Amino acid sequence: MEMLTALWDAAYKVLIAGLVLGAALPALFAVGIRSYAIGDGHEHADGSVTKGNPIGKVAAVLAFAFVVLVIIFGVWTIIAQGQGETLNFHYFPPFHK
Image 1 (cartoon, one colour):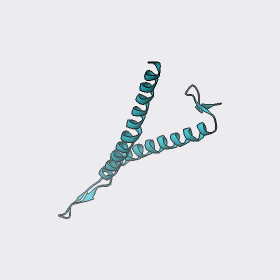
Image 2: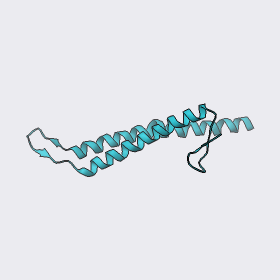
Image 3: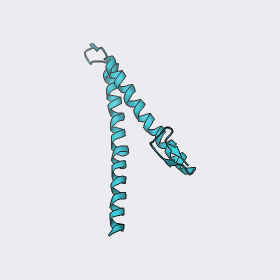
Image 4: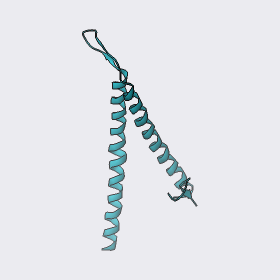
């Protein structure tokens, strides 16, 4: 029974990580793309022009920056664990031998 509990615990963690990294980050990237489009403005078929909203560009930059930081942290974690370090959030940097 203990082995089954450990299996479900590991499966739950993988499911959460998959949802966050597999769905939330691409969705946040899509929000960034949409925000950039809002911030850029566009021309309509009748020739009128819609002025862009600068808040859209700011939101896009923040979304893209967060996605890039998560990717960098993920690569950093993989490299550090490959060198025998363990992840620890008690101080910065969060790795320790």
